[in-house]
Image (cartoon, rainbow, N blue to C red; front, side, top):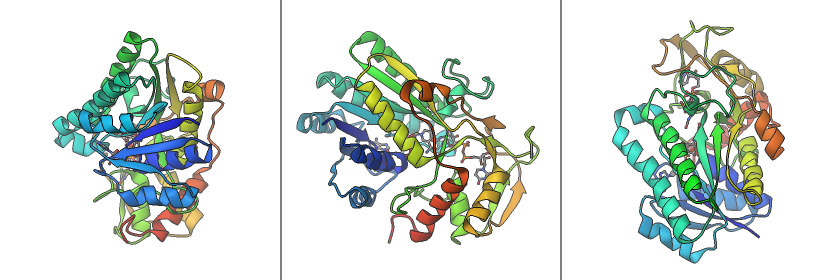
Length: 339
Ligand code: NAD
Ligand code: WQD
């Protein structure tokens, strides 16, 4: 049985991926400093799967401490989720973002090299397509110009990983470019639990629904899109997690560097999200229209053909599922993981 190290595995996508990997027969080890998560998320993964999860509280930038994880476990592959991800905060604190996101990547690569771990899957983002590329995005497009430091960290980390794999022919790298993950595990036990005011649309909608926020502001209604609001490729986090299982199956058997979009290929507008959430849950979302948010692109969505052709993966869940499961999580856990 292969053992997968989930760096940042207590977070939103990491915890869902842990469930799917365990359910597919993999052993997982979680390493996280809980800077944007909590141990309770891993406990919930254990509850869902009925398996215990070996967990390390470690700052992944700290190569020395990270080594312990590699010494104590025979790791077959690493999935690198450990990053800071708030776009607005990255504009205010660029050095924090570059330091954390780049250093975690370098520390993992150093430990992997030292302990001969040759498989790395990286949480990249559609943001690397930047401003220039036309939608739908395909993997062979050149990385574009990002509008914020967070996006640049992803561009840089992709480059670092490609260079590392070029230099070490035994090192395999899969770059997974996520689109807009939303939703939660159907049990309602794990989900997205942002600290403070949510930056992303769906957690904001969910907090309005549960009464934690008064109203949603829709950023801009004068975009060149069918209803004037931005369109995104929202993907259910469980579909996304299953994409990681396929990527692990793949990387354990194949060598080289591959890039995959993980999206549905279908864009929805902000207004469609609000309407679908209301219909799927029966809860009204108080909302107003405001100014455009700096840095937002009118549209972002995937061409998801490559993941289907090579990994045999495609999304199965609908937008209604995404809304229902978000609400199931939020209404069962109005304050997230805090009791
Ligand atoms: P998250 O914040 O819930 O998870 C990231 C985890 O990494 C957290 O548990 C955090 O505590 C941990 N972490 C951060 N820095 C660390 C460090 N130095 N040492 C140890 N642990 C550290 O975010 P998520 O939504 O689960 O995203 C996971 C990854 O996917 C991130 O790299 C993110 O940039 C990327 N991504 C996310 C989205 C999205 O919309 N959620 C989209 C594209 C890409
Ligand atoms: C979606 C749409 C907003 C909040 C970001 C990162 C990306 C990726 C995923 C993460 C946009 C609108 C939002 C609100 C709104 N990375 N909106 N009111 O911007 O597509 O992508 O998250 O790690 O790199 O940039 O996602 O959820 O913030 O916004 O109207 O209160 O919802 O303008 O059109 P985005 P989002």
